[in-house]
Image (cartoon, rainbow, N blue to C red):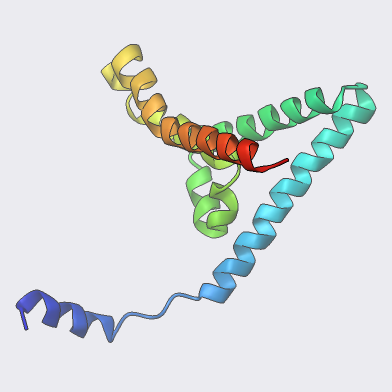
Length: 142
């Protein structure tokens, strides 16, 4: 046994186990509440402004992403995502937070190499995997 494995074994005995069930329930409830808010926005845009379903969904997505960007800019999204867990990171709000925080972190490097480059790095993986999933589902789905 190496020193590192002995240390890991000793430390593990004193670490509390994470509350997996409570975290899953919290993520489900917060993610569901965010989705319910987005659906309310879709219904509101459709009823108030007589927007088509596509337009209403686009406006609701922009509002949800905008809220996440504002919360990121004032430093509150990290606290929210720490509380909500995956419920806050799996929606468009999580993508908006990732892109906005990358842009804020690298703004000292300039607009092209810093802000734009880091925004593409942060959001690129989500966009690529989204496109691949859409392509595969488009082939499989009738």
